[in-house]
Image (cartoon, rainbow, N blue to C red; front, side, top):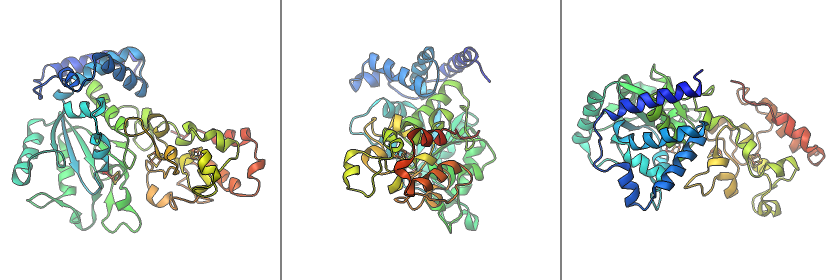
Length: 378
Ligand code: FSX
Ligand code: SF4
Ligand code: F3S
């Protein structure tokens, strides 16, 4: 494994190499920040925050800042497959642009079906041009699942009638790295729900290269931007978990960082939506929260400029960053009981069943906490 000193040197060399490429934006990032009233100091604070989020030591924040400024040297091609576009929305839907959306704006976005001005033949030409010009160097982001049944004919994109399957395979060939943005691209998503008539699959199942999976329907803007920043900075993939998700984002269970965890440990549960417990912020386990089975940083990073996340808004986690959540985590407003989740966390399942029994109030907080302490095996 890289030591931090070696990683720092790698980052510096990577950024030196990027600096040799011509900027693709007319304005520098600092000019853009100034235009939006974001000070240099705020930018440095943001860089330190991203550094911490990526689980890097503070001195790396200089690299993060430089990488953000050089984001316009990294060509990004973003494809849309079978999905709702919520992932892009998660990133760009902000009433006032913040640093995350401005970095996304600064990156050299060569092709993005819902954000670009071009349409029809022109758009297809732009894509071909970008794939050719930046071959071996571009970052490929895919949003949405790939329908594979009937040779992929359930999804065709553009005026030439190419299937999504063909487009993704073609674009993957020259990519320096591939990011599946969202649970659909990562694992198939709701389109892959039983009986999955379109044969919807995750990108990693149809290409033969490594893919970084950003689970979440949608993933937070922090997880998208953090992953882009890591690639810009080091030109390689971060440490990944067993489902190829970056460990810095998906290394901890929602349940372990949840602000209602004290309520869980104390045996204080919402029994039905709108009851006294709901008003008091009790634990949502009994109304279906899947936080004990789900790995994501929602409680710490939240969404929409750190405003909120599902549990804070009063609904349980649906496990949206996990493979097969659409089938395995349903019913979304009931606990799982004794169903097994591919052995993911059988222990939590058993606890869930016990909690549902009459013994709930009698369980000592420590006993429950210690059963839940088992980390995900890697
Ligand atoms: Fe999927 Fe993203 Fe959910 Fe939607 O597109 S992860 S349906 S939020 O938009 O791909
Ligand atoms: Fe939070 Fe859900 Fe865990 Fe309760 S079960 S503590 S609401 S994550
Ligand atoms: Fe998804 Fe659960 Fe987070 S539903 S958004 S992983 S809290």
